[in-house]
Amino acid sequence: MSESTKSLLETLSQVLAYCSILGILLLLAAIGLSMVGRGFIYQLHGAWFGLSVHEIDLFVYGWLGLLKICIFVLFVIPWLSLRWALRSK
Image (cartoon, rainbow, N blue to C red; front, side):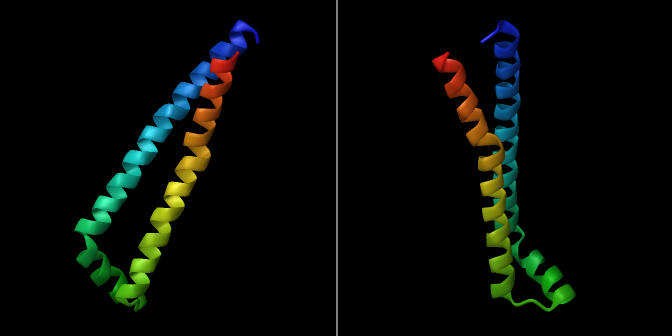
């Protein structure tokens, strides 16, 4: 592996690490807001769309799960793969 390729991969690894950290912080903030602002979410979306508390809980739970999957698939796993590839070379 050439030195320029290794440098590029290390830079990409750093970018993915920062994106992973920011994504996890976003996920934690979303979990916190959904716990703290639960009543507000119910009032707002229940009035707008006529959703029950159970339906809103399912939507929020699904959204948080999708966000977690996206963070891991798009940032954490590629970062780990790059770190592993750089370490083995």
